[in-house]
Length: 86
View 1 (cartoon, rainbow, N blue to C red):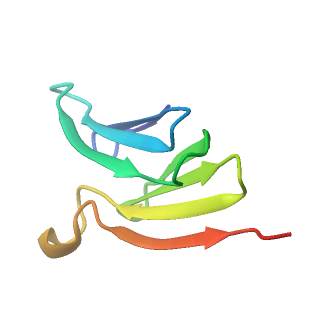
View 2: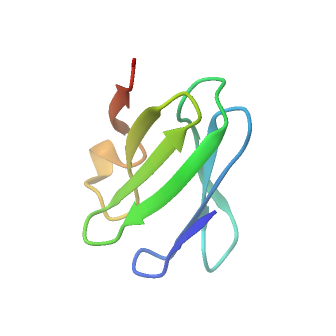
C-alpha cells in the first residue's frame, strides 16, 4: 500500500497483479488496474511531483499509471510497461 497526500490517493495491490486506486478522503474506488498480469505486486509508489503511480511485480515487471491530476483523457491509463527478461 502507498499513500499520496499530494493527490489525495491510496493504492493497494494484491497477489493477482491487480492495483486498486482509492480516494483518500472518501475511500471510494477510483480505478482497478491489471498492473503486471498474474504476478504478485511487490512495489507501489506514487511520484508526487507527477500524477504517476509506479507498480512492480514479482516477475520483474514495472507498470506506470496516470492518476488523478493527469489530463482527463489519460487519467488512470497505463503509460508504459517494462519487463526484466534476465
